[in-house]
Amino acid sequence: MKSRITALLLISSIIFICTGAAKADEVIPTRAEQVAAIHAQYDRLYDIQYARLMVIKVKVANDASMLGSFKFVLADFNGVRAFLTTNLASETSDLEAVKSYAEEEFGEFQNTIYLLEKQAATHKTITCVKGKTVKKVTALKPVCPKGYTKK
Image (tube, one colour):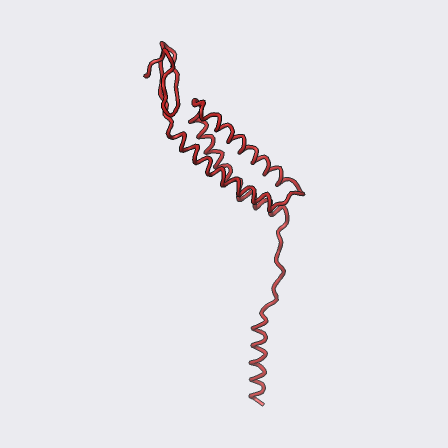
């Protein structure tokens, strides 16, 4: 009799342990929570990139050759930020698509900003003087305009 009870307890314990506790259904976050998570993940990163772009803008302000490409990158950056903001505010947009687009564009801007920083670092600025007029020339190989002398 004792062996039957022991065996029964052993078998019931094994069955109870193997079945485990009932798992609750996965909690699916609401759309607002998903949007907040995407904002939390990417807003700070894009703000850092924007700050880096503004530093580059100061460096290339006097260089006409780089200013055009910089303006193109800045316009693209602002367009991407506007697209992300609009789609995250929309109730019908696909959040997974928006998140993957944000990730893709973030990576592209990381590379582009790095290349712009590298290019801006190779440019030199010289000061040219003609009477009381002072001009700053920034380029890869800067040369004073005709009539100006290097200070």
